[in-house]
Structure formats: structure tokens, C-alpha cells
Image (cartoon, rainbow, N blue to C red; front, side, top):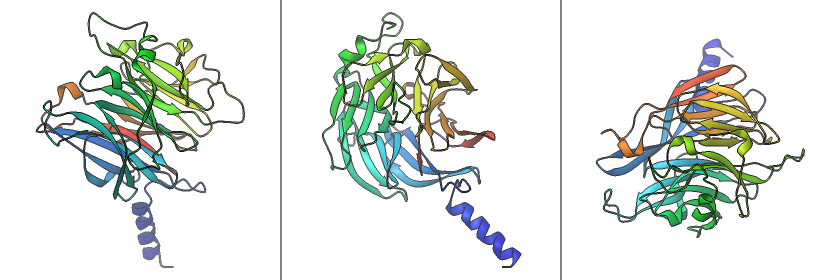
Length: 334
């Protein structure tokens, strides 16, 4: 094969396969970027390409996508915050719709809807059930908590397995003077069943809080529901959580710019990285961590609807940034 032909084929391979681990298959990273412009909800779903230092939009007409998760078969589920009648804020009733997308950006069915809720955390368990952590907009507190749905059924009715009363009982640091807010779930992750019998295998780990960002903590609950348990040994605040196929867990502190690894016994954390405003995270099967950094305040949106956000990759070679304007949600397909 001529050298020029080999170079051409190599360049083409980089374009087609955005992140390939030699001998370990292909890992593709997707990000969801919401935008609020002229009081209208908009957004983009994109594929990351670390080799070319860019993102490739695959769908551009989403309604404020706040979270994305990849299911077996390379199916993407995207949480889209929308207005029921297509109106403007605050004159219409909001809801979150979980929409199925193919990895080429083709839009599929709405698999679930939650009224007056704002989904930031979303995960799947080993059985393919979808879990969504919600805040509320406006303060419709009854819809805050954790919801479960079967995405294989079109427009399934989600079941609320953690309710506001369950959260309120946990929030012993609730700030009711400076910034009173209803309890909300910010992020959640399912920890797969692993053979070494870790105490949180098969559970959901989630972050919840109210008031100022210093009042957010880490909790665990069974994937079937029940009473959540605060994991007080690891301190606070924690605003984001991600788990990997081997049961490893990472936590992120948005307010203070820290990422840590959770130990196997839920008793301590080990510092992992310092990063300004880490927002959402995802892990691949090799333990590579992907983090979006959020420089975007929903309550104080600039005219463009977005500010500078970055997607970071952490692996054995160090950290690598990738510009991804307005990125919130991140997920990995393998």
C-alpha cells in the first residue's frame, strides 16, 4: 500500500471513530448542550472527537437537553426540558421528556414524561430500567425526587421511588434563611453488581440538597426504592456522582472545584483532580473519566443562552480538554 493511501485511510479512520482504544474496542462520547434564547428552549446533541479537538453535532433541534445516557445497542436517551404548548417562559407549563435517539442523531419515541420537573441526573441499571433525578421548575415540590421508567415502552408512566418527604427528612443542613429552596436531586448513578460484594453494589447513589451549594450531600437508595441513606462519612458538599462497570465511583464538588474517588467501603474519599465547576461525569469500561464543566447559570442566562463550557477526559496519560460550548450532559457508548 502506498504511503499516501495509508495516510488517507488513517485520517478517515480518525474522522469516523472519534476515540478508539487500541485492542479494547471503540469508545464514543456524547454531550448534550442546552440553550435558552429569546425565551425559547433549544439545544444540541453532539459526538466528541478528542483527536480533532472538536465536537460534531448529530442533532440540532432539541428542547433544552439537560442529561444523556447510552443504553445497550448504542441507543441514546436524552432528557429534554420543554414547554407543553410550545410557549415561552414563564407563561407555559414545563415538563421533562425522555427522548430516544440513534447515535446518528435520528430522533425516536418519547419514552417517558415528568410534569413540572427538571432532570439533571439520569442513569440505567443492569436490567435496562431508566432512573431520573429531578428538581422542579417552578417550585412544584411534589415532582422532586427520583423516578423510574421502562424505556422499552413508548411514553411509559414513570414511578416516583424517592419523594420530597424522603429527601426533606435527610436535609439536616437545609438553609431556610438565606436561600430557601425545595429539596432536589442533582445527579445519580447506578452501581453495577460486582463480584467482590461492595456494600453499594446494585444501589443508586445520588446527590441531593437545598439552599446553598454547601448543603449538598451524597446518598444511597435501593433501585427498587425505599428510604434513602445519607453517606455522611465522606463529608460534603457533593454535587455529581459517576460509577463505572467495575464498581468504581467518582464524586464532584461543583462549588469548590474538586473531584474525588470514593473508597469501596463508603467511608472515605481520595482526591483525584481539581477542576473549576465540574458538573456531570461519565466513566467508560477502562476507567477513563469524562467531565463537563458548567459555566452556565439557568437563573441568570446571558443573551446567547450559553457560556464557555468544556469537556475533559482523564486517563492514564493525564487530562485533556475539549471545547464543548454549553455542554451539560455527558455519556459513553462502547
